[in-house]
Length: 347
Image 1 (cartoon, rainbow, N blue to C red):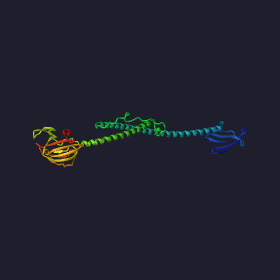
Image 2 (image 1 turned 90 degrees about the vertical axis):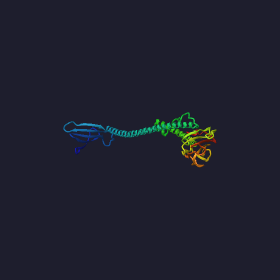
Image 3 (image 1 turned 135 degrees about the horizontal axis):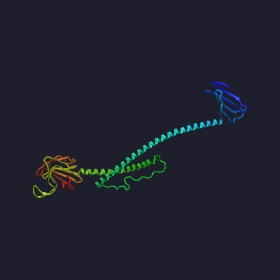
Image 4 (image 1 turned 135 degrees about the vertical axis):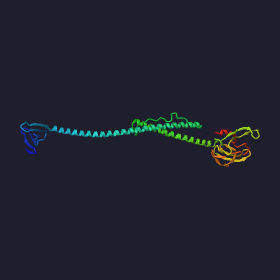
């Protein structure tokens, strides 16, 4: 037996067991522990063994002996390794699950955000549908007022009914069913809106062309008083102030202050200008579509033949030229060469 810093090694034979035993003495405080390993003698195959712990207290106390089978030790070691491996595996799974849970939470949050975006888009599409419906109403009213053809409404309404969602795997199938339905509905409504918008564009273009034509007609139709005053003689048969005979008066006489401006009641072209002994200085304006207006008894003629005029342009001044009892304007309107009552064109 040898000792080194309180630890000794001892080898001794056993007369009863065919084994060799080595012992290690370890001193812990007042007690001394001897660890002995027993096995089959050298030259024979080892079948089993044990480890013996000898607890030798200081003094005269009884030595205690603790024997543990190497099989048990191996089992404990294997069990420890298994527990360690299982712990490592479970720890790895736990970390992986935490990552998956974080990813799932992130995907759910993104999914919710996408769903909210789809719902916002759906509300905008609904608003767009209402605006299109209002435009359809407006288009219908204008057509009725303009005596234009009113297209019949679709029996299925403004927006039709979409088909079912296909069963095969698509990118949308990775989204929740509610969101997939929203996507299909939005796509269908957008297609319908595009088609309806194109139809409304064609309709409004037709309306614009019609209204531009009407605007041109209205611009060339006499509609305002050529001079502000009071009517002293109406259109039709009357007693002549000069001969006291019954005669046809082909216009109306509008009394006004001498020199007051006379304006064109609509756009047109000066077709005639001159003077005679009946209506004195006169101006004729051709408004197109067979409409001609005549102005007589002018003080002067400031317009020349072929000159274009617009509604409100000054064409002369109130005078007393020709056969007249006082300053006034003789105003006549001809339609396709026939005199008509000018009051039909005074608003």
